[in-house]
Each structure stands twice: as structure tokens, then as C-alpha cells.
Length: 205
Image 1 (tube, rainbow, N blue to C red):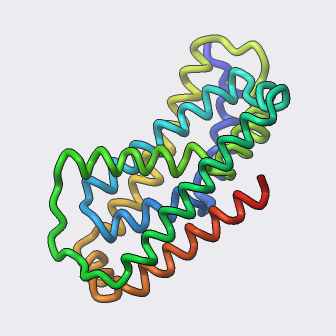
Image 2 (cartoon, rainbow, N blue to C red):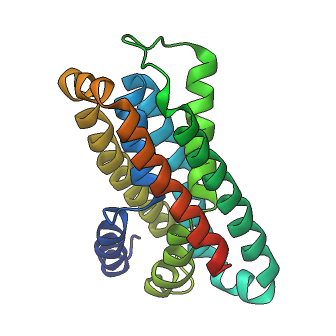
């Protein structure tokens, strides 16, 4: 039987945590205006998959694992920081290139977008700290299978709805057209934000 009190507490905490801007939000926003709607949604899918992974780990006791093996959290953070710095730097370097008026949808582009979502979120310090500390603390011990599945369902639905909303809103033709007119500066700002998040992650590691 579902523990509705625990599910409600986790739902409120996750709803507050998911909307706070971080690396995931920046990555989704840029992909939405710079690429196709399908690619933006594939990036969202990668983020959601990792959120489900972190949620499952939190429910099963990720805080205990990281306490026993602190080097594991460090490795994940450093790898994530390195990727964010590389990705942000690439955006800045390529900011002067002309935007493609009609980005093409292809399998490799979709796979790359999904991979970007996974990598951006797997080393996201905001996600790690949130799930390892706040989310896991709100989860009572000895959950039954129904409550476990319900909690994962809440995480999946909320993450999909929020990031999907961001992706669909910013991929609107008018917004995409505005991006193409100001690509140079938008890419530089997004790149600088992502590099800054990566540096901050590395320093805090």
C-alpha cells in the first residue's frame, strides 16, 4: 500500500528542488533555442533518466554509500565539472559561427542530445546534494514497493513536465528566430554560465 504521507512530502520537496535553475536548466534552454524541438526533448529525456537514477539511489540509501565511499562522489563531481567546462568553452568558441536557419533532425543528433542530458545531470552537484541529503532525508526507511514506484513516478512526471515545458516554450519559432539574430551573445552568455557552474563544481569538489 502506498505511504501517501511520505509520497506527499517527497513530492513537495522535489517540486521545489526541480524548478531551481542550475546546469540542467541552462542546458535545456540553450538546446531549445539552438537546435530542434526533438533534440531539446531528447536532452530532457537524458536529464529525466538520471533524475530517476538519483531518486532510486536516494530511496535506497545513497547518502550512506557516499558517506562510506566519499571518493565516489568526488569522482562524479570532477567528471561532471570537466564536462561542463568543456561544453561551455565549446559554446563560447563556436559563438561566432552562423546559426543554421533550419536545424536538421537525425539519429546522431538525437543520441548526442540525450547523452548531453545524461552527462550534464550525472555530475550536477545540485542534483547530487539534493538527492543525497534533502530527498533521502524525506524518505522514510523500509518503504514498500508500491511507495517506491510511486515516488519514482512523481520524480519522472515532474521532471518531464518542468523541463519539457521549458524546452517547448523556448523552442517556439519566434524565440528560435530571436536566438539566431543574437546567437553570438546568447552562446557566449550560456557558455560562460556553464563554465562558471563547472568551475564552481570543481572548486567545491
